[in-house]
Length: 434
Image (cartoon, rainbow, N blue to C red; front, top):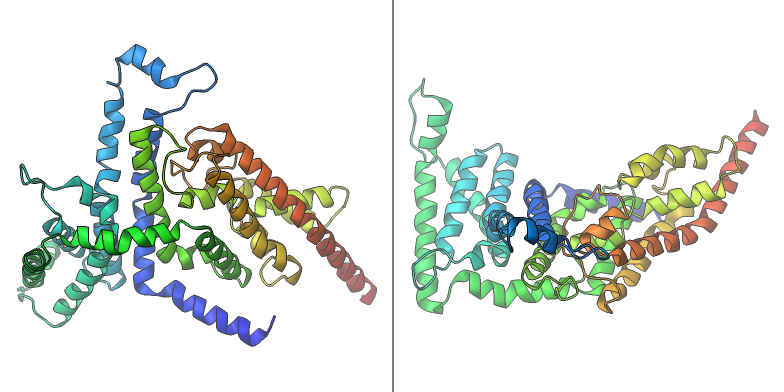
């Protein structure tokens, strides 16, 4: 690989990974993942599928009354998915403001307040329409969080603040200093809402969703998009960059939105086959990146198979040490211990195995062989368990994971053979030189 090209690629990728707004978006989504996981499990438990002759939902109905016990899960859903837009607008604004060493709470409150000002009201009681507080408001939430926090920063830096005498507590000082910027921003948002509704006869949420967000999400839920994401992730890791973090600010909002849409539909239909989206975050985590980027759990298996009779072999020792972490999808030990970074022997399998698994998994879900993903589990959930949970409790998800691990292991094996031979020759050469 041309060294100049590699160096230029690393520079560009590093800039992308450090870009302030993308980092704020990535960290904003990461911060609310616990809420998403709790809400996801609440929906999953309320709609848990039968296991053989055991029907969990019927069993719970008999003991606690028909569907009465599901009120708990429904309430959790209201506090997580139903207000997803509210959660994310505050979270991103907070993260961006903190990156500027500004008051993150004030920035978060301004963005949240503005978001609510723009949300359409229900026609009968003038209450906020939950449709736009949740998943459908994600795009507006991101734009507001970034745009209004930048405006808040500019107003603060322009000294449009009230001077506070010495000795005033810091909390009171921040509140007083933010008064004029907050007032200006909220007035501007109010004027925008009034003007837009007057000219367009609709809300900004409805306009953006049907013109931009819905088509964009539909384009993202395609096989070519999934292949590009998985390939770029591998390429970044191969040159020693954290591909997941670099792409996180771009990919997380898209694929988290798609899984949230699946969970909402699953909440209504009770069927993981009837949800709309194939490519989601758990689709990639559970069926493609098993063991981490590059499906390195299969690489560990391949090494242990090939080098089982070897003694004091570098590959074998690294694989044994990496296995416990690899089971929980932590692959830095194998990535940097083998190493895979800039290791031309591993270039082909490391880059292309995730692409192959993406294609296999996509058609497995698209043809109905395996249910689509309807739950978001922690990324560290081990394979087998994650395959069962993300497909709504289907053993077909486990079967797909096992098949993908087998395919990846078989592809890795010949390259591991080559790598071990090269390592033995280099070790022999070093001993001979001594």
